[in-house]
Length: 389
View 1: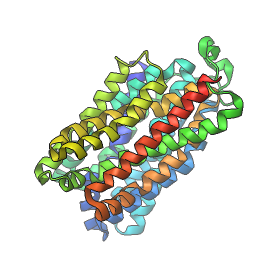
View 2 (view 1 turned 60 degrees about the vertical axis):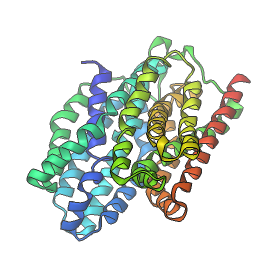
View 3 (view 1 turned 180 degrees about the horizontal axis):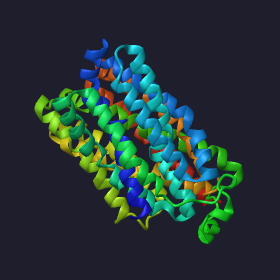
View 4 (view 1 turned 90 degrees about the vertical axis):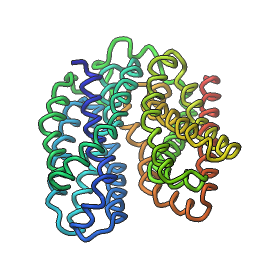
Protein backbone atom coordinates (compact mmCIF):
# COMPACT_ATOMS: atom_id res chain seq x y z
CA UNK A 1 0.00 0.00 0.00
CA UNK A 2 1.58 3.29 -1.05
CA UNK A 3 2.21 6.19 1.27
CA UNK A 4 -0.37 8.30 -0.57
CA UNK A 5 -3.12 5.71 -0.17
CA UNK A 6 -2.30 5.07 3.48
CA UNK A 7 -2.33 8.78 4.26
CA UNK A 8 -5.45 9.31 2.15
CA UNK A 9 -7.45 6.68 4.01
CA UNK A 10 -6.19 7.93 7.38
CA UNK A 11 -7.14 11.49 6.41
CA UNK A 12 -10.62 10.39 5.35
CA UNK A 13 -11.07 8.91 8.82
CA UNK A 14 -9.65 11.99 10.57
CA UNK A 15 -11.92 14.44 8.73
CA UNK A 16 -15.02 12.24 8.97
CA UNK A 17 -14.65 11.86 12.74
CA UNK A 18 -13.97 15.52 13.51
CA UNK A 19 -14.86 18.23 10.99
CA UNK A 20 -17.95 16.39 9.74
CA UNK A 21 -19.10 15.04 13.11
CA UNK A 22 -21.25 17.93 14.44
CA UNK A 23 -23.47 18.09 11.35
CA UNK A 24 -25.01 14.74 12.32
CA UNK A 25 -24.49 14.49 16.08
CA UNK A 26 -24.95 18.09 17.28
CA UNK A 27 -28.72 17.80 17.91
CA UNK A 28 -28.74 14.51 19.88
CA UNK A 29 -25.55 15.45 21.69
CA UNK A 30 -27.07 18.76 22.69
CA UNK A 31 -30.29 17.19 23.95
CA UNK A 32 -28.42 14.79 26.24
CA UNK A 33 -25.97 17.35 27.62
CA UNK A 34 -28.31 20.30 28.11
CA UNK A 35 -26.97 22.33 25.20
CA UNK A 36 -28.42 23.79 22.03
CA UNK A 37 -27.03 22.62 18.71
CA UNK A 38 -25.50 26.10 18.31
CA UNK A 39 -23.70 25.50 21.62
CA UNK A 40 -22.22 22.30 20.22
CA UNK A 41 -21.02 24.21 17.17
CA UNK A 42 -19.56 26.81 19.54
CA UNK A 43 -17.50 24.06 21.15
CA UNK A 44 -16.44 22.96 17.67
CA UNK A 45 -15.35 26.54 16.85
CA UNK A 46 -13.27 26.52 20.03
CA UNK A 47 -11.65 23.30 18.81
CA UNK A 48 -10.59 25.07 15.63
CA UNK A 49 -8.86 27.74 17.71
CA UNK A 50 -7.00 25.02 19.61
CA UNK A 51 -6.03 23.52 16.24
CA UNK A 52 -4.64 26.90 15.15
CA UNK A 53 -2.51 27.06 18.28
CA UNK A 54 -1.06 23.56 18.02
CA UNK A 55 -0.48 23.64 14.24
CA UNK A 56 2.96 25.34 14.17
CA UNK A 57 4.24 23.06 16.94
CA UNK A 58 3.03 19.95 15.09
CA UNK A 59 4.60 21.20 11.86
CA UNK A 60 7.96 21.77 13.51
CA UNK A 61 7.82 18.30 15.05
CA UNK A 62 7.21 16.81 11.59
CA UNK A 63 10.14 18.80 10.20
CA UNK A 64 12.39 17.30 12.88
CA UNK A 65 11.09 13.76 13.32
CA UNK A 66 8.94 13.04 10.25
CA UNK A 67 5.19 12.65 10.12
CA UNK A 68 4.83 9.13 11.47
CA UNK A 69 5.15 9.85 15.22
CA UNK A 70 3.05 13.01 15.05
CA UNK A 71 0.23 11.39 13.09
CA UNK A 72 0.24 8.28 15.29
CA UNK A 73 -0.01 10.53 18.35
CA UNK A 74 -2.89 12.40 16.69
CA UNK A 75 -4.80 9.12 16.35
CA UNK A 76 -4.41 8.51 20.08
CA UNK A 77 -5.57 12.05 20.88
CA UNK A 78 -8.52 11.73 18.47
CA UNK A 79 -9.52 8.49 20.19
CA UNK A 80 -9.21 10.10 23.64
CA UNK A 81 -11.29 13.10 22.61
CA UNK A 82 -14.03 10.97 21.05
CA UNK A 83 -14.10 8.63 24.04
CA UNK A 84 -14.38 11.62 26.40
CA UNK A 85 -17.17 13.03 24.25
CA UNK A 86 -19.08 9.77 24.46
CA UNK A 87 -19.15 10.14 28.26
CA UNK A 88 -20.16 13.82 28.35
CA UNK A 89 -23.16 14.62 30.53
CA UNK A 90 -22.95 18.42 30.82
CA UNK A 91 -21.66 21.35 28.75
CA UNK A 92 -18.27 21.59 30.44
CA UNK A 93 -17.58 17.98 29.44
CA UNK A 94 -18.47 18.72 25.82
CA UNK A 95 -16.17 21.73 25.68
CA UNK A 96 -13.34 19.77 27.30
CA UNK A 97 -13.75 16.92 24.82
CA UNK A 98 -13.74 19.30 21.86
CA UNK A 99 -10.62 20.99 23.26
CA UNK A 100 -8.86 17.61 23.06
CA UNK A 101 -10.28 17.13 19.56
CA UNK A 102 -8.82 20.51 18.59
CA UNK A 103 -5.34 19.34 19.57
CA UNK A 104 -5.84 16.26 17.39
CA UNK A 105 -7.17 18.30 14.47
CA UNK A 106 -4.21 20.67 14.58
CA UNK A 107 -1.76 17.77 14.40
CA UNK A 108 -3.68 15.23 12.34
CA UNK A 109 -5.53 16.87 9.43
CA UNK A 110 -4.32 17.99 6.00
CA UNK A 111 -1.58 20.39 7.12
CA UNK A 112 0.17 17.60 9.02
CA UNK A 113 -0.30 15.18 6.13
CA UNK A 114 1.09 17.72 3.65
CA UNK A 115 4.12 18.32 5.87
CA UNK A 116 4.64 14.56 6.13
CA UNK A 117 4.71 14.20 2.36
CA UNK A 118 7.10 17.13 1.93
CA UNK A 119 9.37 15.65 4.59
CA UNK A 120 9.43 12.43 2.59
CA UNK A 121 9.48 13.71 -1.00
CA UNK A 122 10.70 17.31 -0.90
CA UNK A 123 9.76 19.34 -4.00
CA UNK A 124 8.24 16.27 -5.63
CA UNK A 125 5.33 16.11 -3.16
CA UNK A 126 2.73 17.95 -5.29
CA UNK A 127 1.23 14.85 -6.91
CA UNK A 128 1.06 12.99 -3.59
CA UNK A 129 -0.61 16.00 -1.93
CA UNK A 130 -3.23 15.98 -4.68
CA UNK A 131 -3.70 12.24 -4.18
CA UNK A 132 -4.48 12.40 -0.47
CA UNK A 133 -6.91 15.29 -0.91
CA UNK A 134 -8.62 13.27 -3.62
CA UNK A 135 -9.20 10.42 -1.18
CA UNK A 136 -9.97 12.77 1.71
CA UNK A 137 -12.69 14.38 -0.40
CA UNK A 138 -14.89 11.39 0.40
CA UNK A 139 -14.82 12.08 4.15
CA UNK A 140 -18.34 13.50 4.25
CA UNK A 141 -19.57 10.77 1.90
CA UNK A 142 -18.33 8.15 4.36
CA UNK A 143 -18.66 10.05 7.63
CA UNK A 144 -22.19 11.41 7.52
CA UNK A 145 -23.91 8.10 6.66
CA UNK A 146 -21.84 6.11 9.17
CA UNK A 147 -22.43 8.60 11.99
CA UNK A 148 -26.14 8.75 11.16
CA UNK A 149 -26.49 4.96 11.01
CA UNK A 150 -24.78 4.32 14.35
CA UNK A 151 -26.62 7.23 16.00
CA UNK A 152 -29.97 5.89 14.78
CA UNK A 153 -29.30 2.32 15.84
CA UNK A 154 -27.23 2.73 19.00
CA UNK A 155 -27.10 6.43 19.90
CA UNK A 156 -24.62 9.25 19.45
CA UNK A 157 -22.41 8.05 22.29
CA UNK A 158 -21.85 4.78 20.47
CA UNK A 159 -21.09 6.69 17.28
CA UNK A 160 -18.30 8.55 19.08
CA UNK A 161 -16.92 5.26 20.41
CA UNK A 162 -17.02 3.68 16.94
CA UNK A 163 -14.98 6.55 15.55
CA UNK A 164 -12.56 6.27 18.49
CA UNK A 165 -12.14 2.57 17.76
CA UNK A 166 -11.49 3.24 14.09
CA UNK A 167 -8.69 5.64 15.03
CA UNK A 168 -7.07 2.96 17.16
CA UNK A 169 -7.54 -0.01 14.85
CA UNK A 170 -7.42 1.59 11.39
CA UNK A 171 -5.93 5.09 11.44
CA UNK A 172 -3.12 4.36 13.90
CA UNK A 173 -1.82 1.25 12.06
CA UNK A 174 -1.95 3.09 8.71
CA UNK A 175 0.04 6.04 10.06
CA UNK A 176 2.42 3.69 11.88
CA UNK A 177 3.32 2.09 8.52
CA UNK A 178 4.48 5.39 7.05
CA UNK A 179 8.18 5.47 6.11
CA UNK A 180 10.56 6.48 8.86
CA UNK A 181 12.85 9.47 8.32
CA UNK A 182 16.20 10.24 9.90
CA UNK A 183 15.93 12.78 12.69
CA UNK A 184 17.36 16.18 11.88
CA UNK A 185 16.74 19.87 12.06
CA UNK A 186 13.63 21.21 10.35
CA UNK A 187 13.66 19.91 6.82
CA UNK A 188 17.25 18.72 7.09
CA UNK A 189 18.81 18.21 3.69
CA UNK A 190 20.19 14.79 4.47
CA UNK A 191 16.70 13.30 4.83
CA UNK A 192 15.31 14.73 1.60
CA UNK A 193 15.67 13.13 -1.81
CA UNK A 194 18.70 14.21 -3.80
CA UNK A 195 16.53 16.14 -6.23
CA UNK A 196 14.69 18.01 -3.48
CA UNK A 197 17.03 20.98 -3.58
CA UNK A 198 16.91 21.34 -7.36
CA UNK A 199 14.14 23.90 -6.98
CA UNK A 200 14.93 26.82 -4.75
CA UNK A 201 12.34 29.16 -3.20
CA UNK A 202 10.50 31.00 -5.97
CA UNK A 203 10.39 34.48 -4.37
CA UNK A 204 13.43 36.65 -3.57
CA UNK A 205 14.36 36.62 0.11
CA UNK A 206 13.53 40.33 0.51
CA UNK A 207 9.95 39.63 -0.57
CA UNK A 208 9.34 36.37 1.24
CA UNK A 209 7.63 38.08 4.18
CA UNK A 210 5.16 39.71 1.81
CA UNK A 211 4.69 36.36 0.07
CA UNK A 212 3.85 34.76 3.42
CA UNK A 213 1.31 37.49 4.24
CA UNK A 214 -0.31 37.18 0.81
CA UNK A 215 -0.49 33.41 1.12
CA UNK A 216 -1.95 33.53 4.64
CA UNK A 217 -4.60 35.94 3.34
CA UNK A 218 -5.51 33.60 0.47
CA UNK A 219 -5.72 30.57 2.76
CA UNK A 220 -7.88 32.46 5.26
CA UNK A 221 -10.28 33.52 2.50
CA UNK A 222 -10.44 29.97 1.15
CA UNK A 223 -11.29 28.51 4.56
CA UNK A 224 -13.78 31.29 5.35
CA UNK A 225 -15.76 30.83 2.14
CA UNK A 226 -15.59 27.04 2.37
CA UNK A 227 -16.85 26.94 5.95
CA UNK A 228 -19.45 29.67 5.40
CA UNK A 229 -20.94 27.80 2.44
CA UNK A 230 -20.84 24.49 4.29
CA UNK A 231 -22.90 26.04 7.09
CA UNK A 232 -25.30 28.26 5.14
CA UNK A 233 -25.49 27.22 1.48
CA UNK A 234 -29.04 25.76 1.56
CA UNK A 235 -30.35 28.88 3.30
CA UNK A 236 -28.56 31.18 0.85
CA UNK A 237 -29.96 29.28 -2.12
CA UNK A 238 -33.47 29.61 -0.67
CA UNK A 239 -32.88 33.36 -0.45
CA UNK A 240 -32.12 33.21 -4.18
CA UNK A 241 -35.57 31.76 -4.82
CA UNK A 242 -34.80 28.03 -4.73
CA UNK A 243 -37.30 25.77 -2.96
CA UNK A 244 -36.12 24.26 0.35
CA UNK A 245 -35.96 20.64 -0.83
CA UNK A 246 -34.20 21.62 -4.06
CA UNK A 247 -31.74 23.82 -2.15
CA UNK A 248 -30.59 20.86 -0.06
CA UNK A 249 -30.17 18.68 -3.13
CA UNK A 250 -28.23 21.40 -4.97
CA UNK A 251 -25.99 22.02 -1.95
CA UNK A 252 -25.12 18.32 -2.01
CA UNK A 253 -23.43 18.90 -5.39
CA UNK A 254 -20.57 20.70 -3.65
CA UNK A 255 -18.96 17.50 -2.33
CA UNK A 256 -18.73 15.68 -5.69
CA UNK A 257 -17.63 18.93 -7.33
CA UNK A 258 -14.75 19.23 -4.82
CA UNK A 259 -13.61 15.74 -5.76
CA UNK A 260 -14.02 16.72 -9.42
CA UNK A 261 -11.79 19.74 -8.88
CA UNK A 262 -9.11 17.57 -7.35
CA UNK A 263 -9.39 15.14 -10.28
CA UNK A 264 -8.89 18.06 -12.66
CA UNK A 265 -5.80 19.09 -10.69
CA UNK A 266 -4.60 15.47 -10.71
CA UNK A 267 -4.99 15.10 -14.48
CA UNK A 268 -5.59 18.18 -16.64
CA UNK A 269 -3.68 20.66 -14.47
CA UNK A 270 -0.95 18.40 -13.14
CA UNK A 271 1.64 20.00 -15.44
CA UNK A 272 0.31 23.54 -14.97
CA UNK A 273 2.00 25.99 -12.63
CA UNK A 274 0.39 25.73 -9.15
CA UNK A 275 -0.20 29.48 -9.11
CA UNK A 276 -2.24 29.22 -12.32
CA UNK A 277 -4.41 26.49 -10.80
CA UNK A 278 -4.88 28.52 -7.62
CA UNK A 279 -5.80 31.73 -9.46
CA UNK A 280 -8.39 29.94 -11.56
CA UNK A 281 -9.79 28.36 -8.40
CA UNK A 282 -10.20 31.68 -6.59
CA UNK A 283 -12.36 32.97 -9.44
CA UNK A 284 -14.73 29.98 -9.44
CA UNK A 285 -16.84 31.18 -6.50
CA UNK A 286 -17.18 34.80 -7.77
CA UNK A 287 -18.11 33.47 -11.23
CA UNK A 288 -20.84 31.34 -9.65
CA UNK A 289 -22.18 34.38 -7.78
CA UNK A 290 -22.20 36.36 -11.04
CA UNK A 291 -24.29 33.64 -12.68
CA UNK A 292 -26.74 33.81 -9.76
CA UNK A 293 -27.03 37.57 -10.21
CA UNK A 294 -27.65 37.24 -13.94
CA UNK A 295 -29.88 34.16 -13.98
CA UNK A 296 -31.33 33.93 -10.48
CA UNK A 297 -32.18 30.58 -8.95
CA UNK A 298 -31.82 28.79 -12.30
CA UNK A 299 -28.05 29.13 -11.92
CA UNK A 300 -27.99 27.58 -8.44
CA UNK A 301 -26.63 24.17 -9.61
CA UNK A 302 -23.89 25.91 -11.61
CA UNK A 303 -22.99 28.00 -8.57
CA UNK A 304 -22.73 24.93 -6.32
CA UNK A 305 -20.54 23.11 -8.83
CA UNK A 306 -18.27 26.10 -9.45
CA UNK A 307 -17.87 26.70 -5.71
CA UNK A 308 -17.02 23.03 -5.17
CA UNK A 309 -14.53 22.90 -8.04
CA UNK A 310 -12.72 25.98 -6.78
CA UNK A 311 -12.72 24.80 -3.19
CA UNK A 312 -11.33 21.40 -4.16
CA UNK A 313 -8.40 22.90 -6.06
CA UNK A 314 -7.68 25.49 -3.36
CA UNK A 315 -7.35 22.71 -0.79
CA UNK A 316 -4.46 21.37 -2.85
CA UNK A 317 -3.00 24.87 -3.30
CA UNK A 318 -2.81 25.22 0.49
CA UNK A 319 -0.31 22.37 0.40
CA UNK A 320 1.57 23.13 -2.81
CA UNK A 321 2.00 26.92 -2.82
CA UNK A 322 4.21 27.13 0.30
CA UNK A 323 6.34 24.35 -1.18
CA UNK A 324 6.63 26.22 -4.47
CA UNK A 325 7.45 29.60 -2.95
CA UNK A 326 9.60 28.72 0.07
CA UNK A 327 10.93 25.26 -0.69
CA UNK A 328 10.90 22.10 1.41
CA UNK A 329 13.14 23.16 4.28
CA UNK A 330 11.11 24.06 7.38
CA UNK A 331 7.89 23.41 5.48
CA UNK A 332 5.93 21.94 8.38
CA UNK A 333 6.40 24.79 10.84
CA UNK A 334 5.83 27.40 8.14
CA UNK A 335 2.68 25.66 7.00
CA UNK A 336 1.39 25.62 10.56
CA UNK A 337 2.03 29.36 10.93
CA UNK A 338 0.44 30.19 7.56
CA UNK A 339 -2.71 28.33 8.59
CA UNK A 340 -3.22 30.11 11.93
CA UNK A 341 -5.29 32.97 10.40
CA UNK A 342 -7.24 30.45 8.33
CA UNK A 343 -8.19 28.42 11.41
CA UNK A 344 -9.19 31.55 13.32
CA UNK A 345 -11.47 32.90 10.59
CA UNK A 346 -12.81 29.41 9.99
CA UNK A 347 -13.91 29.28 13.62
CA UNK A 348 -15.89 32.49 13.19
CA UNK A 349 -17.14 31.91 9.64
CA UNK A 350 -20.50 30.22 10.41
CA UNK A 351 -21.46 32.95 12.88
CA UNK A 352 -20.22 35.92 10.83
CA UNK A 353 -21.64 34.77 7.52
CA UNK A 354 -24.86 33.83 9.28
CA UNK A 355 -25.19 37.45 10.41
CA UNK A 356 -24.60 38.58 6.83
CA UNK A 357 -27.32 36.25 5.55
CA UNK A 358 -29.76 37.52 8.18
CA UNK A 359 -29.05 41.14 7.22
CA UNK A 360 -28.68 40.90 3.46
CA UNK A 361 -30.16 37.55 2.39
CA UNK A 362 -28.73 36.47 -0.96
CA UNK A 363 -26.75 39.72 -0.99
CA UNK A 364 -24.34 38.10 1.48
CA UNK A 365 -22.86 36.30 -1.52
CA UNK A 366 -21.52 39.63 -2.74
CA UNK A 367 -19.27 39.63 0.32
CA UNK A 368 -17.96 36.10 -0.28
CA UNK A 369 -17.47 36.90 -3.99
CA UNK A 370 -15.48 40.02 -3.10
CA UNK A 371 -13.26 37.91 -0.86
CA UNK A 372 -12.64 35.55 -3.77
CA UNK A 373 -11.62 38.47 -6.00
CA UNK A 374 -9.27 39.71 -3.26
CA UNK A 375 -7.68 36.26 -3.10
CA UNK A 376 -7.18 36.35 -6.87
CA UNK A 377 -5.51 39.76 -6.53
CA UNK A 378 -3.19 38.51 -3.79
CA UNK A 379 -2.11 35.58 -5.96
CA UNK A 380 -1.57 37.95 -8.90
CA UNK A 381 0.83 40.00 -6.77
CA UNK A 382 2.58 36.81 -5.67
CA UNK A 383 2.94 35.71 -9.30
CA UNK A 384 4.39 39.09 -10.19
CA UNK A 385 6.95 38.82 -7.41
CA UNK A 386 7.98 35.36 -8.66
CA UNK A 387 8.48 36.67 -12.18
CA UNK A 388 10.82 39.32 -10.80
CA UNK A 389 13.09 36.76 -9.18
